[in-house]
Image 1 (cartoon, rainbow, N blue to C red):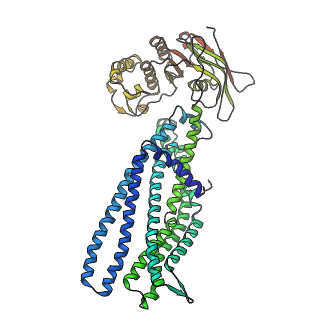
Image 2: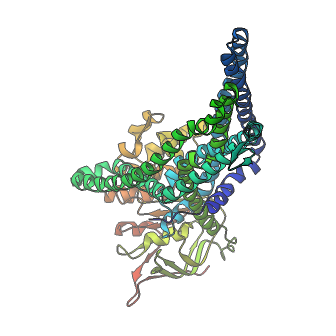
Image 3: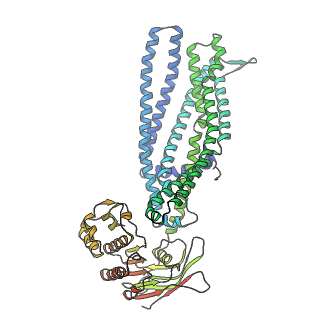
Length: 577
């Protein structure tokens, strides 16, 4: 289990997460909302101070049995209540407004980093990656902002209440000092509240110091369980065909049991904190009245002052006890901050990998050139090594070889998304498109899927219809604007046909095909590769395939083979200009 971070470390990380928003171009709006939120909290504190003075006057009218004064105090309270109500309502309203703006900026900030280049892919392939990035962006950001605002505004309110009510309590308890063994103690109620709160804070931290680590672990296990459910949904057909329901149920039950086990640890720790904090809160409500009772019953203190002192004592004690009351939120914030900080560091690390010097232009008329390239796995073992490869503009290269020899890894390296690669790649400037073996279809309409990675363009409607007809998907023309789960609705072969149509629409300068037609029958596969060469005559095409019948439709064919005695594959495909 992760060891709990120190409070200082948590605060430092929390500040580093929050600061960029308030320094951004939207920061002035956020700062204004935060200032207004603090102002609303101070209005509530001011109303509480006014109510404390009102309490003295109100209870004094009861002791004096002064009816006109009693009625007057009801009108005074009505005015004070207006400030209480407006302060509380607009504090919540401003907090919600700031929360959604701040969350919008942070979500965009993390998405920008995570989706920059191929950061998301490189990070997920690394052993240094983080678990459940979806949860960190969707839920941890929301929790972080909510908890930060709650704790910050609560702390400011506690400080304001402390400054206001300490003065009141000191004046009240100094007016009638407590004498112990002949020594007068000025402001004895202030000292009593301070000692009471310090003792309570120390005990609370001693009981709950392990809560941060347990909270962190709970967040991780909840995310793992949710990820398992999402993965089952995304692969439900494969699970059904394999009759893997029993296995999936067992695996999900195991993940849920991990949640249950940690939940009981969380329950037990929160139970201890709850027992102490509730006892502390309940007993402290009437503790000041017990302390002041000798003065009241001796006649040295009036009822109004007695009630005002008790109220002021509890306000001071609450302010001193802010740490106790907020401990569970602090523990939760520490766990969320740790997760966001880890995520930010990973994004920063792998985004930096994308920032590379611009490669030199390829020699001669080559659209793609590579030399001395070594592609490794995340563990450091060599997958494939390339002595030299050169593909001239407008020509095509077919790479064949047995399964597991590293063909897909080579395509990933050429595409620039694989992080564990050394050597030199260079390509001519232009549009590059990669069609993987398992096509990706985004959420939305079929038109959106065809236009991906760009946005649908109304002017391209005739070209979209033509592309569908060309690749044999004419039955889908009438459903172009239908929003559906096309990744589930279409077969693997249909999805591969759709990706070929996407290539026809995109008109790339460099097209990389990684077993992009492997789900189709031999005749259809050959037909689509011939179609690409015909409809994209200016494109440079590099394809990976097992299909021998494709050899006739490519300018050059290179066999990627396992080198004897080496855990690598060596490719040497080179032709002079």
